[in-house]
Length: 149
Image (cartoon, rainbow, N blue to C red; front, side):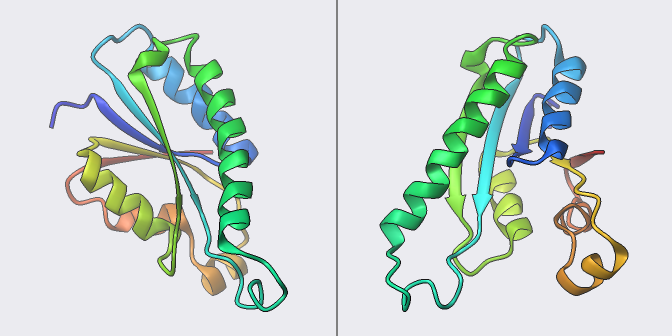
């Protein structure tokens, strides 16, 4: 691998904000870089549809949130690289874990590096719900993972 394809899993947390700055500083001025911004959102809760929700509205709400996140991230990264080097995608997990979606996208895009923000969850929360960053790190046999805290 050539160390020039980055997958950044982004959301609206402060951890993602730190990702933008960190990655920007690390890749400043490199014209051979390609950054894939990925926003993964969960499937609707089980009672969502029985309470009158529909999938189109659910997806639209998350895609609107993702557009704001992508704009903010692109603006931050544009201080370091050309915005044409950045692509974006928002994906619903659809019954998969967030880490599984990130890992599938890493493979699809052939990214050398995956960048994640550390959420700072408690040990109890990590035990009960798992940690996206831990799951991705455990699966990283042929690519690099940066966990930004």
